[in-house]
Amino acid sequence: MTIHCDHFDDLLLAGDSFSMQVAAQHARGCPACAERLASWNEISDTARGMHASWSNDMLWPRIERAIVADAKRSRARQWQIAAAFLIFAALGAVVWRANERVRNAEFDNAILRASAVDQVETAERAHVVAIDNLEKLTKSKLEDPSTPLLVSYKEKLMLLDDAIAECQASIDRNRQNAHLRRQLLAIYSEKQRTLQEVLREETHASNQ
Amino acid sequence: MHGVAAALMSMPRITSNEDIRLANGCAAGDTGVFEEIYRHHGDRMKSIAFNHLGNVSDAEDAVQETFLKLHRSASTYNGESAFTTWMYRVLINTCYDALRRRQRCIQEAPIEDITYQRAGASVDDAKRMTLRNMLAALPEQRRTVFVLFEIEGLSHAEIARVLNISEGNSKWILFATKKQLQEQWKNQS
Image (cartoon, rainbow over all chains, first blue to last red; front, side):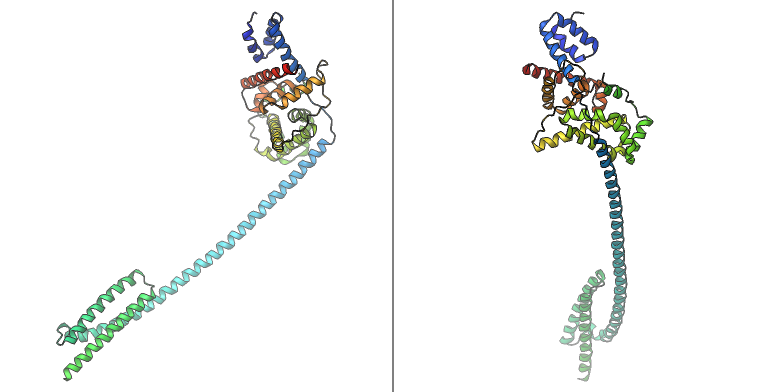
């Protein structure tokens, strides 16, 4: 087989015995390729003698000890992981229990607050009924006020009714707001006083 | 062909019961299985490590580290290659790690000369030392392909399986490496 120097590298790349035979055949008639083939083969020949071999009777016992120690460490690590998991689980249980208690306490408090609010509202309703009764007594006089003072009382009562309605609306939005309830109580007290004054004014006018 | 190559040629290409037995033994820390692997492959493992790391001490450390890695990660062996192929891959990666650690330390270990198992009487020690120095300067993959093919006598098919590359790529890397060495070889001469 005749080959050209340009294809010499292809033979070296293929590297199989047939390609190397063809390369050797070509090199016999081509000094440049012969030199390349010689150094190519010299590298391979040198490399084949580089397989390292030495004896060390201590190496296997050393490796064995290292494996045994590693296995022990690995088992210890597994126990550590298991212990860490248990501690984590125990902590989780404690935290969960504490949360549960807090939630129960909050629920109980909410129940108690609701009960207290109900009591307040019952008392408020009784108070309002009493004031309504008082208002009925003054109704005829206020519908047709005969004196400027009664006109003034009527206007004041209208203002107080508006304030009561506004305050009641706010309380409906937040039943547990004690401040609003105190404010509503104060307005009702004022209305009560005003109605009592109207009644007194009526009595005073009839005496005259 | 070396005994090394003959042994590796006999490596099964697909997972066999033997591979599963070796992997299970390693995962369980069975020192009997490790000793069996060491008796069969220890010599070539040492040679491969020595030809990557350049000294006996580092080579022995790399072999020991490889056995520890086999113990720690045998449970992850998925059987896509023969157990011994996987083991040589672990060894070569361990050598790469050692080389990188050495580069970080910026203290190149001196290349030792040891008693070689000579294949040809014409090859003298000076040539081997020259070639060893040139190998030390090669990139990792080139050095590995050269060591496995030219020194340890593996076929391109076996190298491809160990390095997880194609057979054609293995051939090309060897050719390019030898061309590079040839240039340096001429200059040395």
